Length: 324
Image 1 (cartoon, helix red, strand yellow):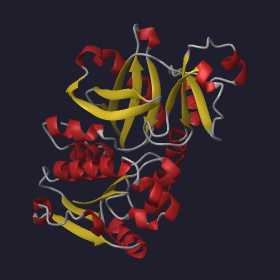
Image 2: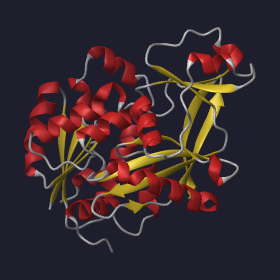
Image 3: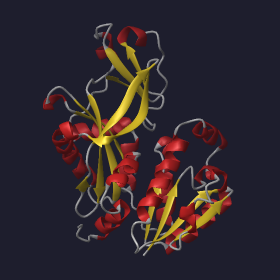
């Protein structure tokens, strides 16, 4: 079986992006996180001896000499410009039985990449275009979760903001964004002196334990072990510091139960989704914050502790095969 692995930044997709977007992305932590995920995907996939693995790799990554690329079942395809990325993507996507692609939702990069692959006729392990669209928008995610009675923080309107105690904490975040980037935590009094950017959402800050739950979607969705997230407030900004290696054992039951309520929203999807949530003082305080319609950094931790290849599990679940 042949698969294609690619991650937007590490695989050269950035060459096909606009100059302004490229400069913005290169300044962000998304580049480092992307390479970590591509590495984790590759290390996980080589555990399965049934797979031949094609990997697109940006020449600028300078990792082509890594031992993993010399393995007999791994083919590395270097990318140095936009035309080369498009050509190799089109060629390899149709040769692959499955494509596993990673990209941030920012600037609709994930949606565009998924569309590009599907136009090539690729069997890409991602949610549908509609599912990617609404889950890439924090406002539409709020609407979808509310519609299906999944608890999530409400979005405050101007009248509600005016009634807040001046010490109340609020979260100010872009509608379209990845992770905690450009997300601020302010008091209501501090917010009064700030002019929010267009496409900005304001919600009450929900205190609790930050947990991430990953789900392998497909014929029989598999909820992975919940992991604690390290998220801190630094200079009025939320900072994602990564996920902890330890399983969120103490809160696993509640986190799993909340994740189960989100799975029907991704009916028919294949691949992987990541559900970020806050576990409160009691079960009635538990909230889903956002849903990532793609592979997340939690994969890096989960794959290390897994007894079997998670890439293999994604493929088997997409194919409707019984998972062992």
